[in-house]
Image (tube, rainbow, N blue to C red; front, side):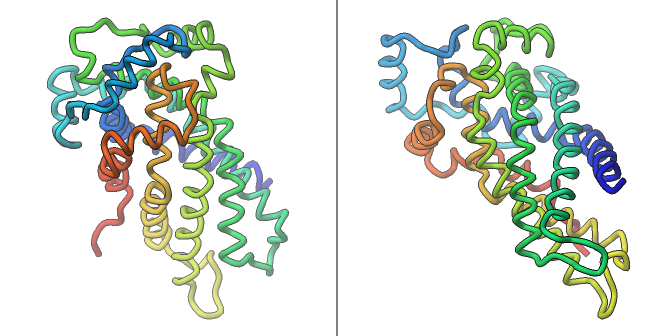
Length: 300
């Protein structure tokens, strides 16, 4: 019964949360990928040797920045593509977030019980963090196909693609083309390492901060059930910032790998170092502000 409650709570939370934060996520992805969108995109993830040499020579030149910042990206996208373009490809992340949160809540609850949680016996903060990390690792394998489709649909709104024909007509068309051209594993699980490196430390920090805030507010002799809604909201908001701050560069690398098939056959470290050489630390954290800010707790 507890497992089903976790599942339903996660599903409802994922659905409502994605409707609210998806425009911010679109801006984040456009900022992360703006300097790679113009690189050659082929129907196959394997570029020719000649193309690879050309791309390597281009890496040495610092590419122009398409967007000056999050606000410029947001206003430019709305002005040129319309407000609802910020929701481009929404069905994929909507289903993905529901599946993600449902599996995450269910996995987290099950791991806690395996670690010995029961009425009258609470787990330590360290154990709760470890449970969150395990749950994050599990959910990454459910989430990655949705992330691949989401990012590919979002980058169609990039200013770097102005004047070009949309590559996909719909989310379904994107799925079909991706599987047909690259297969299920190489296509839908592109960037899996990046997602693991985002979800495991991210969820360790999310649950660690959330549970830590709750523990610090429990009255003497009381329990978590005695806490008011404001404490849970504060803990959730602080946890959201911690999640994205834990290892944000992994998300940036993942967006690059998923948005451009020429990166799909390259490893995480290879793409990470390329972004660092090309743009420095700023490039690895591009879009962090607009991603973390909506999760930040309001002032008291």
